[in-house]
Amino acid sequence: MVEVATSILNIDREKAIRTLYDLEYAKTDYFHIDVMDGKFVKKDTSSMMREYCEYLNSISNLPLDVHLMVEDVESYIDSYLIYEPNILTFHYEACKKKEQVLEYIKYIKERNCRVGITLNPDTPIEEIYEFLPYVHMALIMTVVPGEGGQKMIDSTIDKIKKVKEYCVKNEIDIDIEADGGITLENAPKVREAGANILVAGKTIVSSKDYAKTILELKNA
Image 1 (cartoon, rainbow, N blue to C red):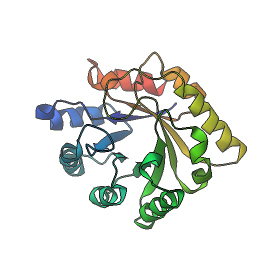
Image 2 (image 1 turned 30 degrees about the horizontal axis):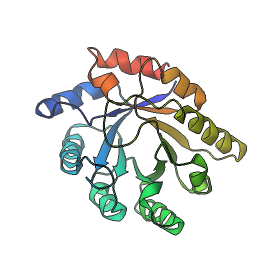
Image 3 (image 1 turned 60 degrees about the horizontal axis):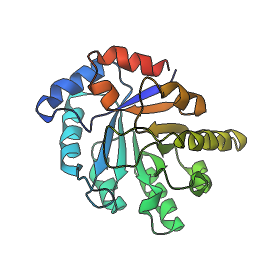
Image 4 (image 1 turned 180 degrees about the vertical axis):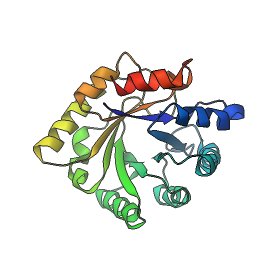
C-alpha cells in the first residue's frame, strides 16, 4: 500500500476549511502544499498556501508536505518552517551550483525538518543521485510544474524506475514521491515503478467520494 499526499492547489477557496476537514476525515496521509512564486513557475500561490497552512495548523494534525517551486529557496524555507511541516522539498533547478544543493539540505536539516529534492521532467534523474544519501525523499515531477490538472508525462515512469533501482543498489532508504497527473488509471504503473507516495489533486478533490478515491489510490 502506498501513501497519498493530497494537493490542495485547486480546492475551492471559499470552501477551503470544510474541504480540508473532509480530506482529513477521508484519511489522506499528507496535505501537499504547492508553493509557487510566480518566477520559477508562472503561477504565484505563495499567499494562498500560507493561508491554507495557517488553517491546517489550527484544525489538523496531519503532516504537511511542502513543495517549493521557487527561485529564492532559502527565504521560502524560512517562511514555511513556522508551520512545522513534515518535509520541505526544493527544486534542483533552483540551485545555481551543486554546492548550493547541499547548503539547502543542511539548512533544512539543522532546523529539525525532513528534506526532499525534486526535479523537472526534462532534467536527467542522474543529476540528483549524489544527493540522495543526504535527503529523506526524492520527488519526481511527472508533469511540468506550475499548473494542476495536467496529464502525466509517460516517460517520467522510467525516471521513477531508475531512482528506485539506484536506491536499492546503493542501499539508500528514502521515500520516492510522484507528483503530477496521478489518476486511478495510472497509479498502479507509478507504484510498480517504485513510488511509495502519490501526490493527487484533481483526481481526489473532483471526486464525489474522497475516502473511496484515496483508498483506491492507496491500494493501486
